[in-house]
Length: 131
Length: 310
Image (cartoon, rainbow over all chains, first blue to last red; front, top):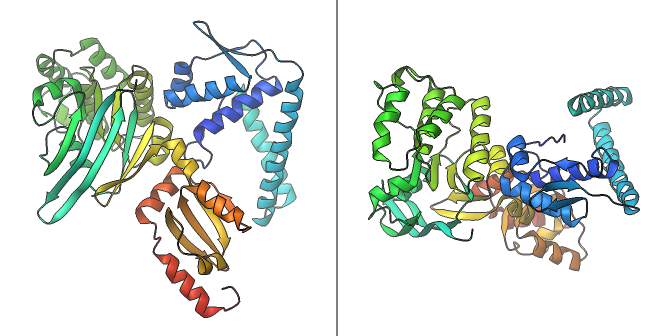
């Protein structure tokens, strides 16, 4: 599972992790039935407080996205129907945030072509780090 | 899990006329990582040294890992590991000699653990301590603070003197071993972005008191920044929990602790506002250098300059 935690961001760390795991579950990047790292492993991997990761998993389990099987591990759940709507909600939210960001960029004086080249560079970097 | 590992009640300490700790109280549940934040010279080290019984206090009570540090100094050293801010060690010994020297003092000293830390922190075993770099000797200090597997580890600014790679190693060690094994960790730091990822709770020490303590996430939910029309300042007294206020033209930016009540007040009066999220750094600054007293000044200035906005 690929996650990127940004330290010193104004978005709390737990929310960063929740949003990234959620998007990956909903979009199918993390397929149903995939086993996720244990709380301890993920805490180690991200160098994040163990209890924070625990709360993240609890929250995602409450949303029905993952399943904590006692003594076995944590798995991405099999869901029908609602995944599509949830994904759509997340994508719409992303689109609004993206538009707000572009607006901010325009106010800072970036031209359309500059923004386009920033976008493709960022997209390439994101693809690369996911591999 | 709900046991209390560290309890500090109304601790006071003065040096002459200078009151360093005015009235410090807090509790740390077993297994939590508790970060002590404060500006330089605010008394972090004094507080830490009194927790260890190294610095007598003028009043108040301290219990740590079930010990009274002033009455059970030996037992305390067995149960608590300590890394001092300016750790000094016998310069003529090597790392291995230091470990062999310390081992008999601690019944629970774990040579394998010491060995693993030496390896992980890449500390040369047979070089005299006086020849080690600053970073290496900080890491050696950590090794000897942790090798007896203490119930409570107290680390006075462990990040000081470590480069970013070693800090990462250290943080990983902290998460992987100390936290996962349920040990209690107290550490002071000035690197707030790192603290946020690691700590369960943060406490801000300022003007001799713990001015705020809370889970990092709760703190960020409860303390927020709001931008309001200037006229709000003229028409209302300073709100409860105001930490800082700043005028931005015809608007004011306020930082409020206990945001939900304040937002309730705003929406019941139909006042438009916008909110921005704050980093832990911003929150810390608001507590220690925020100037809530400017409220009335801003109100007065706005009133005298433009009668329209107020």
